[in-house]
Each structure stands twice: as C-alpha cells, then as structure tokens.
Amino acid sequence: MSFFKKMISSQLIDVIEWTDSSANTMVYRYDRNGKEIMMGAQLTVRESQVAVFVNEGKIADVFQPGRYELSTQNMPIMTALKSWKYGFKSPFQAEVYFVNTKQFLDLKWGTSNPVMMRDTEFGMVRLRAFGIYSFRVVDPVAFLKEVFGTTELMTVEGVEGQIKRTVVSALSDIIAQSKIPALDLAANYDELSQFALNSLSPRFAGLGLKLESFVVENISLPQEVEAAMDRRTSMGVVGDLGRYTQFQAAEALRDAAQNEGGSAGMGAGLGAGMAMGQMMQGALAGSQQPSAPAAQEATAPCVSCGAAIRQGSKFCPECGASQSAGACRDCGKPLAEGAKFCPECGARQ
Image (cartoon, rainbow, N blue to C red; front, side):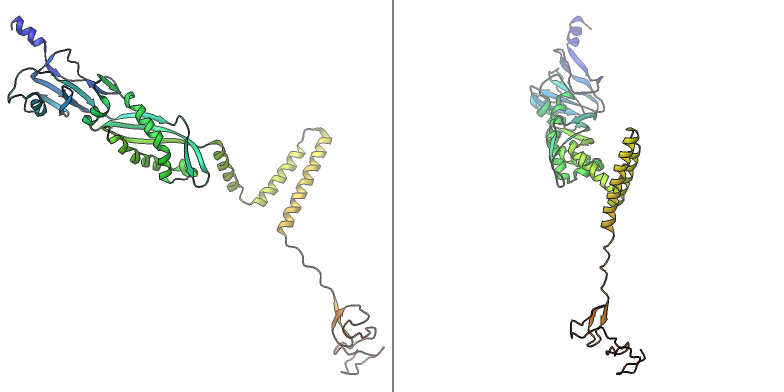
C-alpha cells in the first residue's frame, strides 16, 4: 500500500462501536475525530444499546442490537437524505449516537417539603414520603428529540431531577385518588406503589422513557396525627374502662405506699392513695349497682268499711270509724270488746 493510500485510510472509520464502562451513561455520541465513515464499515450494536445515525441535525437510520456492514441497503433514510445512488461506495460524514436502553435501578425519590393530603377522618394532613424507582429508554428517537439534544454525553443525573419533581408534584393527587385512609397507608404500601406506577407512567411516555418500577418505602405523618393514632390504639388496648380505672387505683395505692418521703410521707401518701381508691371504688360501685326500692308502708283494713289504712291508725280516713275496737279476722266486721265469736259470721276470735 502506497503512502498516499495509507494516509487516506487513516482518515476513514471502518469500525464503529461503543463499550459502556459506566453505570449511569444514557447517551454517548461516537467520537469521529473529524474522520469520515467508510462505506462498508462494521457497526456493532451490543445488547441494551441502540445506534442512531443523524445527518445534518436530522435523525436518520436506527440500528437495533447486532452487527452490520454499512451500505445503502441498510441505511435507506441516509441514502434518501444524501441522494445516494444504489451501490454508493464513497465515505460520508454523519453523527452516530449510542443510546443505552438498559434499566437504571435503585434511584431514590423523596419529598423535600411536606405534601398536603385530605383525609376523611383527620381532615387536611401533611405527610412526607420516600422510596426508590427504576426506568429505561424505550423510544430512542423521541428521547433524542425531546431530552438529549446535541450534547456529547448524557447521564442519569440529567433526567433524574425531572423525574423526582414529577413524582413529588403528583404524589398528593395519587394518594387522594387511591382513597386509602391515613390510618391504613402503612399497611398498603404495595397497593399505593402500583397505583402510583400506573398513574405516573403516561407522564414520561412522551419523553421516550418508561418507569419500570416505583416503590414507596415510607410515609410519615405529622406528630399530632401519630399521637392521635397512639391514643386510639391505647383505648383499644384498655377495653373495659371500669376495670382499667380500678387497676389505675390499685397502681396509685402501690405508688403511694412506695413513697420515699419517710414514714410521715409514706403515711400521707398511703392515706391519700387509700382515700382516692375508696372514692373511685365507691363511684364505680354506685354507677354499676342499681338503687334499692323504697320500703313499702304497712297497712291494715278498717274495722268498719274495710278500706286499707295505715297500720296503727286510731280512726279510718274514709268512714271515720274508731279503730280501737277489735275486728273479725275473717269478715272484718267490728267486734265488741272481749268478744270471742263474730256476731256476723260466727268465726271464733
């Protein structure tokens, strides 16, 4: 090979490929160093890659994973843009972009400021949340047009901020639409994560991206809401309020008896504890036991008219008859003093 041919060949590219040594590179523009691409050059596109040819700012042919020998047959758009004839063999200039289509994992999201949520039980509450997500490029052409532009390199950090802000801004709507009460959020992280994934995915489709997973790791409520939840849990644990009150009284007696303030303090504490326990016990007993019925007054029949009158009365309030004389035990008619038989019915007295 002559010196002239060597010099010409050194200015041509005959192998085009990209090996990714990083973990977060999304797009890499192949560096031609001012050289032209030889027609018939070997193009190698590895798995999780897509090669995109750009001619004078216009996206041309897209190559999926595989090995190609560049020609007019497998570059129809470039052939049309450059008006090549069939079987064109001359070198040409074009930009080649390698788009990484692998899944980018373990990316974190979180709320820098609390987001508002309307809850049916607690009203308006503020909450914070955080978790992880993963995504990939599914439409390289749309991604190059809408996001990448003409830079030489793009990493995950270039789109991470956009994704995080979109997630946080939509979080309050997602929680409201899921209709999960604040008390049940912690028990429904999986359901909420799936609901959020379905709601957020359409927002990134226009950018050529796809959310592969979205995980809610934690949602924290304000301290006052958590305190109210703790009180409600405590009431559920207490159960019978009357027995709980008796238990509290017994605890107060024990604490009073263990007072370290000396014998006088111990006696005062014990007395106060006993008084409090008796008072509470009496209150509970009074609220639990039914009141006794009032005692009925004893009565006896009038010796004259037979009306029921208070026992021991000297005169009947109905007929005015004196009650000093005796009365028949059977018919109730008045008897003379010392009579042994009733003059009306003959009953022995």
